[in-house]
Amino acid sequence: MADFLHQLWIARFALTQGLILTLWLSLVSIIAGTLLGIMGGVALTYGGRLVRWPVRAMVDALRGIPVLVLILAVFYLLTFAGINFTAVESGLIALSLFSGAHMAEIVRGALSAIPAGQIDAGKALGLSSFRIFALVLLPQAARMIMPVWINTGAELVKTSTLLSVIGTGELLFRTQEVIGRNFMTLEFYSFAGALYFLINFSIEQLGQAISRRVGNPADIQAR
Amino acid sequence: MGYSFNFGVIWARVDVFLLGLALGLALALAALVIGTVLGLAAAFAAEAGGVRRKLVAVYVSLFRNMPLLVIVLLVYFGLPQWGVTFGKIESFILALAVYSGAYLTEVFRAGLSGVPKGVTDAGRAMGLGRLPLLWLIVLPIMLRNCLPALGTTFISLFKDTSLAAVIAVPELTYEARKLNTETFRVAEAWATASVLYLATCLLIAAALRFAERRFPKF
Image (tube, helix red, strand yellow):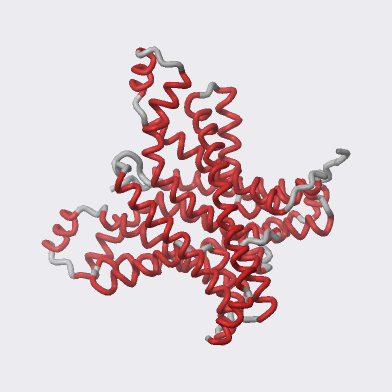
């Protein structure tokens, strides 16, 4: 144990850097994924055939292939196409696409659960389509989405570990580097696991607190 | 960019790719079976209340909040430090099973609460003992209730088998990556892997819809 603590002290900066990168990657990809997801969800719910079908095909394809394949494909294809992105950048693209596809499906579910009468009422009040969306639909959808959205955030923290495979220096990658130096495999993988657990457990608790306050369990079933 | 597609390299190894796909399915199936046993045991243990309920809560919370890749690496590289050594495939199945068991516990607990109380009362009134009641009445109704969730779990487990590539289990993702690095047919390798995964997921989903129609809900 003393030996482990000593090694942990030596590795403190590397692991902290990794932890920060993990949090940053998760945060950026959840924001980008949410924006993509809102656009995708709106397209899926209100778009005409010409919009809806390509978006549906893309969302289904992104949800049907494993994230690891998506990450490796984006990483290798971008490099091969001569576009020089760093591992972090192509990892972010892959994670954002992945979370965007899932969010699109969630947003579509929430939007289609809002009664059509709400839109009619907005029109009757003379609101523009944008205002109907921003003032009438989005607040109601956001409330329904909240618990699932937080869940997606926790999933993304876990998924970000896959970026260690393409050499992104996030927490798992840094842990592997540390293990490469001191061979304390069990200790440091457990330590990384405990850190991930703490992050996700906090997100889970936060999510439960929020959905107790704002959520209505009857509104949306956790998919 | 002057890239000409050449699917000949894929065709030359089509057997390797298909074997990789089959291995992925087998891994997912094995993990689902073990995970189902774990999940059922945990769900019934939680039903008993007390300490057992708390232990189950810890198990579920622990493995749902830990990344699968960390569990896989912990089992394959970490456990040998305690003298517990498994092969690549066994390690991966074990990790995936424990991971899925946590999710399946929740699935089964929901399914269990969906068994109408009147049915178990009726069984008891007919003089069924604890085990026959469980085996003949509760389990069939509950498993049917859980069928859709079990199906989606199987699909996501199948997608998760791609992580086995990280510990060099020769499944589809591993083969695609190998082809990528050996021949530089980047686009072909990943297009083939993606299409195979996607098609398999769609097939499983279709089979599931068929099964749900075939066995009507109680």
